[in-house]
Length: 168
Image (tube, rainbow, N blue to C red; front, side):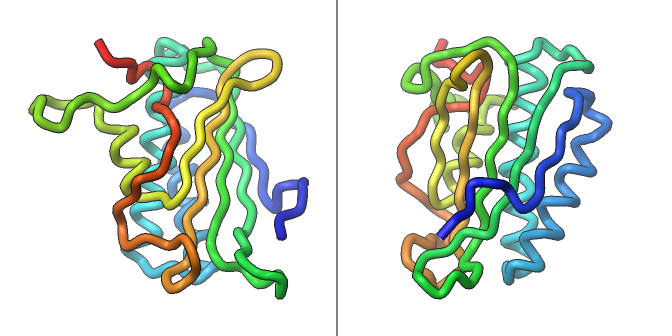
């Protein structure tokens, strides 16, 4: 059962200099919730991809716009013990229809444009939505290995893409 209030909530500006700190925070919390080093790195990578897309595409590289990261332990049964991690990333960037956002075709070999694919492969549940007033929200869940809904690294989850990864 998840409480409404996040266990950790940070607000940062959209300056890329803070990306490493966000990755370290997420990786450290993931480790404390029972994920191994490889899983922690993958979760941090998914968060990094989401933040980079917000900065690059949602905010057009502006380094002074707000981004919020919220974390909760994810639980899968009634005992309330952590069984994974739930993350939510909010911004005030331009809104886009979640169903119009997607990663580029993997056969199109070139740098960039794979953030959505990476996020979906790493996380067990991914959901993009418009925020009520402005901006977008990305909610991601990674279940601990051996819990219902956990994947070994691939996922067929629904959702859209991060800012700016529209199909061309």
